[in-house]
Image 1 (cartoon, rainbow, N blue to C red):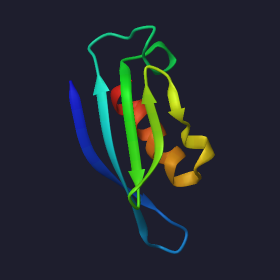
Image 2 (image 1 turned 90 degrees about the horizontal axis):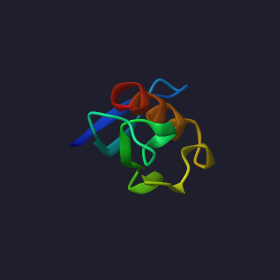
Image 3 (image 1 turned 45 degrees about the vertical axis):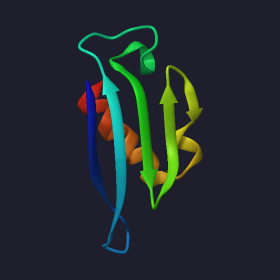
Length: 81
């Protein structure tokens, strides 16, 4: 099932950075899921730039794109994986 939404990530200056996401998560984990989990597809965009992309394997890793990408990724893992 597909899920889409936004996450407001607090910044040190008191503002928020918005991450837009798309997740395809199944009821059961699989070898194609992130860490063997339920998420088989994931895209996170911040300011129109794709900062994380997983499609049965990593194309763009969140840790390569800063703290906001990692925070959004961790929230999505908790919610959907």
